[in-house]
Amino acid sequence: MLKELEGGLVVSCQALEGEPMHGSSHMASMALAAKGGGAAGIRANGPDDIKAIKKKVDLPVIGILKKEYPGFQAFITATKADAKLIAEAGADIIAVDATNGTRPEELPELIEYIKKNLNKLVMADVATLQEGVQAEALGCDMVGTTLSGYTEDTKERPRPDFDLMQSLVNTLKVPVIAEGNVDTPEKAKKALDIGVAFVVVGGAITRPQLITRKFAEILKRK
Image 1: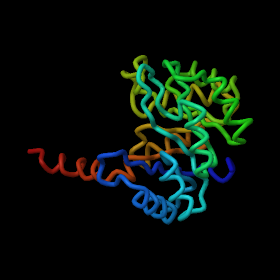
Image 2 (image 1 turned 90 degrees about the horizontal axis):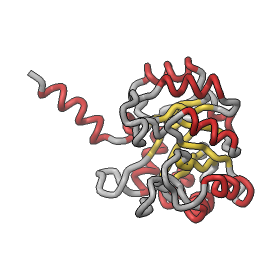
Image 3 (image 1 turned 120 degrees about the horizontal axis):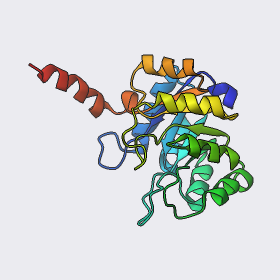
Image 4 (image 1 turned 90 degrees about the vertical axis):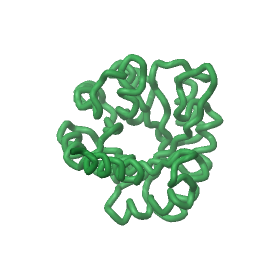
């Protein structure tokens, strides 16, 4: 599966409640369009979207479940119950929040459960090199830069965080994934040149309201 994704583009097809494209049928169509454009894989949020996408495309799916747990910072597939729902929906890889933020369940137990009980590959979404090293030590199969810029310790980091990509590539043995604010083909190519295994792109492809805003704001400038 990793060979299928190597050097390719994974399109993150996500639309949260309240966004114009929210809905499993929309996300399935978006995934189909992504496949038609040459995507090697899909990243999707929630069991309903994953099920709908798997019915329309035969690409590998990285599954997550975004859910806020009051009193805790981790929100991406933060519990074993969340991971089970994603696995049962058909996700091939399960991504988890692997930052050092507070969490409802211990990270080592969550990773072990996904690998041994659900028999799925684990992608660690991290924000720092230290978190990436820890994720590899805990048995994660790949490490992504997904959360750099979104945690308290990294909110001032550049986006995308090419320096973090380079540090992870230089340090880890498992594949490193570029994800987070990769919003142009040139930035995606730069990430591959650094040595990441593949690149995940979301909003720049799948959130039309954000794409439209970029054009509208430029045209408004005097």
